[in-house]
Amino acid sequence: MSAVIQTYELTKHFKHPLFWWIVRAHALNGLTLNIEPGEVYGLLGPNGSGKSTTIKLLLGMLWPTSGEVSLFGRRPSDVNVKELIGYLPENSDLYRFLNAEETLDFYGRLFHLPRSVRKRRIDALLELTGLSYERKRPIAEFSKGMQRRVGLAQALINDPELIILDEPTSGMDPLGTREIKNLILQLKEKKKTVLLSSHLLADVEDVCDRVAILYGGQVRAQGPVESLLSDEKRTQITARMDEKTISEVTELIKKNSGADTPITVAAPMERLEKLFMRVVEEAEKEGISTSGASSARNSDLELFSENTEGADILDSLLLKEKASGKEKPQPEKSVAEIKVHDNSSVLKDLTNIGNNAADTQSTPELKEQHSEPDNDLLNKLSK
Figure 1 (cartoon, rainbow, N blue to C red):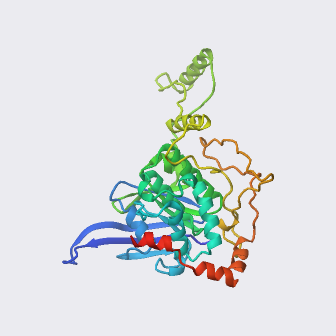
Figure 2: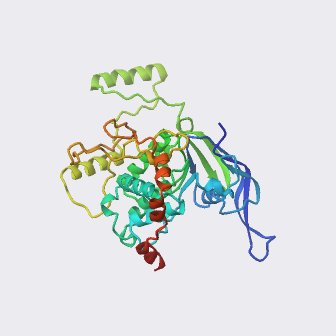
Figure 3: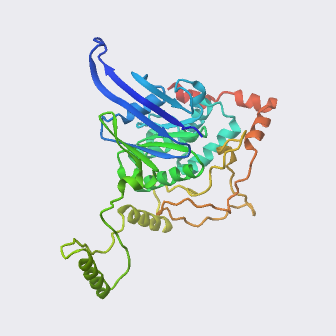
């Protein structure tokens, strides 16, 4: 299978607007990348290293000075490629007078999604991002972190094969950061390709298969995360031992490796993120109210089915059956560990939603309903 993203000797120079022969910045210098399908790839580097320029070149927002770039084997300027891409920019510039539901409906219309499909996807994405209870609040009242959640939802509204995330956890609390990382791992499980640009190295380390570290517009290091971080000169052993055993192990190490071998004996530290998540979970179990975004409900559910021809991934979403007419309360789920769990209790069949949506769209009644303008939405946009 061919690479989703390929660049070869990609170069971008920014020139003076008047004196075009003067180069003011060498943003990229011979960048070569190959990102395979189903891979989570991290793009790292300090400010000005060329990360944002690379993303803009991939999206066709900039033209390269030289070199080649392709997405799914086609040029970024190919309009058909856009339908396969979901993009979360670094700054979420959303319409302030629309609420979260209207915002996602607006972006769904840009992809010409039928009304029934838009409704199902909006409900699922708001649930996924923890905004289902704030869906009617105007974006102007949202914090930066909550706006990022809406931005992430709009990046998934078209069921993309390639998701490009530029600083996705910027402005988010640790709860939202953990949920974003869980979502990225879910996308990976469903064979989606993710390009992640971030300054938070711990986030990249947790979710990425491979990373590239840029500096001065060039790749300075590239490869699998484990191989880049492994230290072959040291060995780590973690076990529960009493004082006598520790003393014996220490003496054995000094005997075999030398008396001056540095040895550190200490209790393992819990990560601050894990502690934070545990405190939040305990507060939620106690029923403490909050006016901000809640933890994502069903964040570990299988929201994306396998790719099948003629059927959208997100079209296979289905609300849980109500056996008695009332939805049964769901147990709290731990999000402290980055794991993707299958939930067999959640219905995920609805296998031919895409075909059903197409059939229903063909009826005159639905066509008339789909073409009917949303006056409230248009009035808000005109403001």
